[in-house]
Length: 379
Image (cartoon, rainbow, N blue to C red; front, side, top):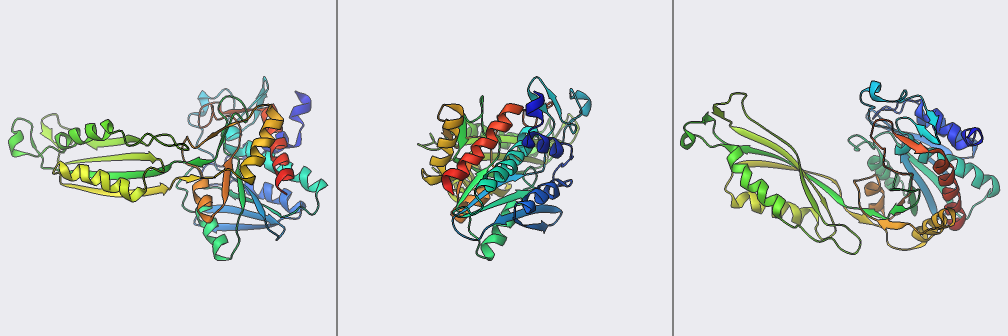
């Protein structure tokens, strides 16, 4: 264990975990990474949008451009007394490295940097260019991070051909699953307007809870689609409902709710919105509904990038990974629309966002080898 703990990627990971980079505070992580990249000959830019810092680093000007992408921000640790050790002091025990962000996704960033160092030491002039896109706004609103960096790159004519995201994509073992796309995410913010009244005189009031109950049952009963060859079925979930005036004998005047669709390519967001509004209108409710589109579904078709990732993983693990579009959203939704092939390959995700988040030390080292091999195959 002493030998693996002294590996460059593990030392770098420890250095990053010690930085309490809770969204959107980067806490100096990008400076650490930028210094390593500049030593390799990268041109590094800090792109600031609002209170979010983003790092765009590129080496070379020729096409094709292979970009590694990820985020330095992490979710809050919660009650630190519930942790077995300080969440911002990396602790290695029984082959696992504990700390907030260890799996999501500072291990991916550490592996990327060390893979680049070893690759470029042997390949001074690769057949193309390499870049890193790193944000501190992935775990939060995600409006001043990768989304705006991609807009800035498009404005000046920089195009990413292939992108490898270091998100924790693996399920049980490193490399058992890679993500080649994601479902879209569409949220609705609903207000149902009624008339407040006494519970004993319902005919003199209009209870928005009663209005919403059959609508909610109908929305949950619908089989929105069966998915398709690439995507799992569309799902509908209510995440928040609030109503009431705080008295047991008063029906409320308003109900507010928030719901979310994770939708496949069987829908587009406009047709999905139209279907929902048809249901609401059929129940003759007085309502206001606002929508927020977090990201459209995207899919990377088989090609050079997917082939390289599949080969790199299989050479390292001995088995071919499953190709998936499940899970939540990622910043791939902002990168793919530019015509970029995007694949997500990272460590096991079982502990992410949890108390005692951790990553296998050996997996971080193996991930470095996978990233290195992907560069060999593409450049």
